[in-house]
Amino acid sequence: MTSTSTFVSLSLAQSLAEGAATVAFALSGLIEAARKRLDAVGVVVVAGLAAFGGGTLRDILLDRRPFFWVQQAEWLWALLALCVAAMLFMRARHFAITERAMQWPDAVGLGLFCAGGTQIALAASMPALVAVLMGLVTATFGGVLRDIVCNEVPRAFSDHRPYALCAFAGGWATVGLVAAGAADNVAMLGGAALATLLRVAALLADYRLPSWQPGAEE
Image (cartoon, helix red, strand yellow):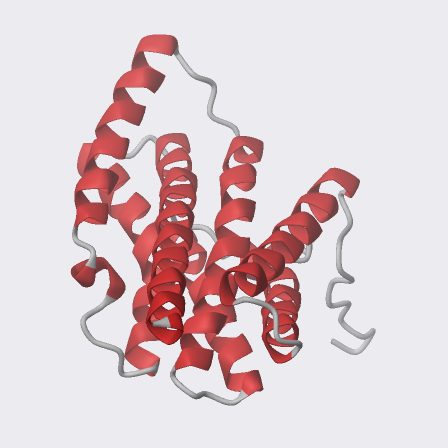
């Protein structure tokens, strides 16, 4: 009875985390699409790529079927409803779209997706490093697709503020908490919180990683 209850609890916690991360990344994609003045179809496509891109690639790499958004198709309806509501709200309120506005939901989605992706890989009996990399893919690939479609160099590679490193740290925190015997939902929330707080701290402090400096000969 205990093991069944634990499995149900883990599944529920993962579902809630993926749902919250999906909404957060969808918002980041929606805001970026609005900044680029895309039409309604473009807004939905960019929001969907941001929300589902990383988790889909993770599921492909782990040979996990059905994909998480196929298994929980209600998130597709939620995405459509969110896009329609946001477009109506921003048009009615003349909401100012800034790059800064996109960064906050993106930071939340980063933390939740990296921890959730890491736990899913651990549940599939992947080694710790592979599990962390799966969390990293889950957390970053949706944003990469969002930026590519919006004709931007992906921010994960170009803005010099820690992004993938935050997800990497959150993934290892999740692995460490699981190894220490923490409950699965506690490990997931702990890893997500660390990644999100690191990203938010980097944004508030405007901390930047060193950029590549070509040598004199180059």
